[in-house]
Length: 149
Image 1 (cartoon, rainbow, N blue to C red):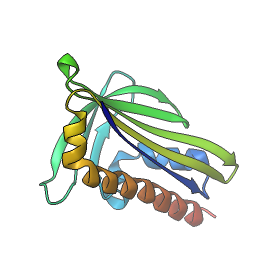
Image 2 (image 1 turned 180 degrees about the vertical axis):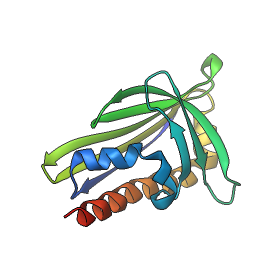
Image 3 (image 1 turned 135 degrees about the vertical axis):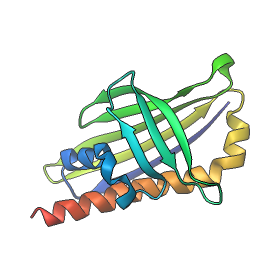
């Protein structure tokens, strides 16, 4: 029982710059329509606390755990609820295509007994949110890359 989303974007900006955008929690509100604030050290085993915007719901706090972080390549985080009720895995994946371009992939998966219900109730909102985040990462990265030329 699962619900999953996958988005990808080729970004004409260096992989490290895109990674820096993902890790710059102080600037999330500038480019991210879905996660409007974020706090984390991004160290595996530590929390990531996000302020999530999914209209018409009020902005709410989502606290998850960092599962892995391979600098410049992969960040994975999520939740694990007891008794197999619900777990989530969220991945940011970067692949270098050239010195000045990379592919960004956004993966999200809900698993567990409640996953179909959550997917049904929030699926369209989650899809819009993760799509907006993917586009926001690309826009912000391109903007920063062009301003550094």
